[in-house]
Amino acid sequence: MSALWTSAEIAAATLGRTHGPDFEVTGISIDTRSLMAGDFFVALSAARDGHDFVADALAKGAAGALVSRIPDGVAQDAPMILVEDVQTALEDLGRAGRARMTGQVVAITGSVGKTTSKEMMRAALAPLGRVHASVASYNNHWGVPLTLARMPRETDFAVIEIGMNAPGEIAPLARMVRPHLAIVTTVAAAHLEAFGSLEGIAHEKASIYEGLETGGIALVNADVETSAILQDKATACAARVLRFGEAETAAACLASVEIIEDRTIVSMVFDGDTHLFKLNTAGRHLALNAVAVMASVAALGGDVALAALGLSDWQAVTGRGTRERLTLSNRHAHAGEIEMIDDAYNANPASIAAALDVLASAEARRRVAVLGDMLELGAQGPSMHAELADLASIAKIERIHTVGGLMEHLHEALPSDKRGLHCETADEMARALPKTLEEGDIVLLKGSNSVKLARVVDALRNLGQSVQER
Image (cartoon, rainbow, N blue to C red):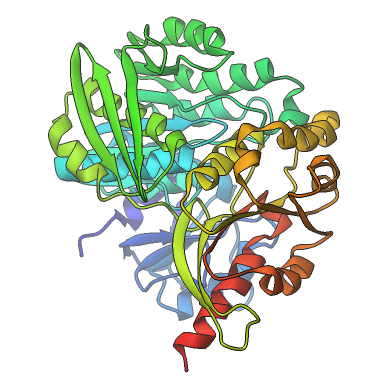
């Protein structure tokens, strides 16, 4: 494997000082649990000081470490790069990674769908060249520079996800990424507590366009109510603005969506041409993400037909709408097969509405939803939870279980024939839910990550695993 960086290159990029022998690295790690031999360990300080793990990293085969001091228990001649501040040095290394890359860069943000769109883009671009993309949801102040620093120098396409929790976070990251094309997937009530209004969220999301390279392309969601805010910023920052959505005025128009079992067939009209492509996951909301991706490929000059083939290989990421069949054990009161939709990674009103639409369209004996609190909605949180009861999809869902203090507002607002269990914690739901399930059920799990609905997902998987092991 060729070197990702040499110690001399790292020192030059970070204005650091090489300590110990020269070295080459084949990867970059911030976590000794996943570190591979040959990685460069970056001793970030977050919940814990990364310097405490440098000795362990070197023992596991790290080629070197990025530190602001020589940690205790580390040999005085150990291979390290000494810098004033590790976070700042990682950002500098990320900029250096971006500077040496000669391919095309796509940046993606949005209240909903940015990780899904990033993975769709990765799949669509794969037939067109060498693609480097963010791992998981590495989209914050350390995730973005880490992704750039990990980028091989021979990359043809980079797909970088950019997120935010507070005002002023997106623009600096976008300027670091310097994308040739930037997308705002949508604007919805996520992190509302920090921004105060949907308009505030839209302004922050739109700031991704500030990082565009000269001649850059901005994709704007034409369907959201704050589209004008996105449009104004895009017009000010981009050489070319493309609107996508179901609106007839959109340059990339979602012409039709057809759900066939667990597939989504999408028709897009772009520059007067109709393009048909397939997703191997069911979901009308996924169609708009796919339109943005395919329009981006076309705008970058890529082969849309090849990209459609690549996109057909895309699979939903664990916790973001993956579907699997589980067999309830014979020890269970209702033995037999159920289907689970694991969308438990995160939630806001828009993403829950989309997930419930998917559940409502599914063919099943019973449709069951397990919904956890949507967090960071501020004073509007209780009412936004209760208003989920008014969604049209609720009529087609037989039972809705809820987890958390905020979701109790939905529990109380539901019609009595829809109302299922209410639990304060995911652990309580994990114990109680299996007893309520029956053969032929399809079960959706959706909630903010910190509610820990993944524990309920694991409990359901264990029901099936117990049968498979027998």
